[in-house]
Length: 171
Image 1 (cartoon, rainbow, N blue to C red):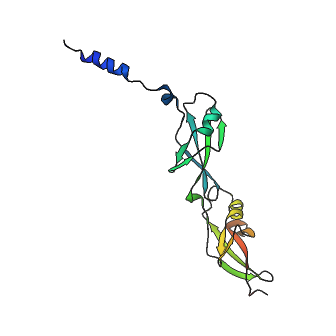
Image 2 (image 1 turned 90 degrees about the vertical axis):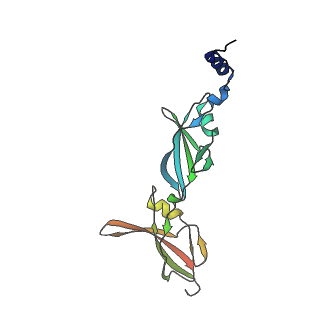
Image 3 (image 1 turned 30 degrees about the vertical axis):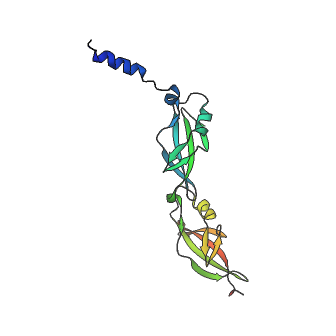
């Protein structure tokens, strides 16, 4: 008896079953690189696709891989589509202090040190400065005591952070 190759193919095709839930799993579309949200953190967002059931539930429960790290949406926003917003570590969102200058004594036991804050991206100068830690003379500071934007002829130039550092030589 001769076997028809097309009928054999039809039998094979009918026996291959793809489980329905595998077809229905939600997944994230292409991630959009948004603004820096904090020092060392950036928001990424994407549309969630293939959702059956509540959109918000799928949004917060569907993991994503962003920059090689597993993440879950912190916020979900419904527009025409459901967008998930993620915050992920991103070194391009980390400003850096320039070289610290030793200033004058600011009272008994305190000396002022100052430096320019460089590489501020996607955030206000004031917010970045107010949150930027530093280590000066082996002492760690969570943030500067003061932040000022220096100006020349009314044009803002650079953001400076000022730290009050313990110094026994200040009497």
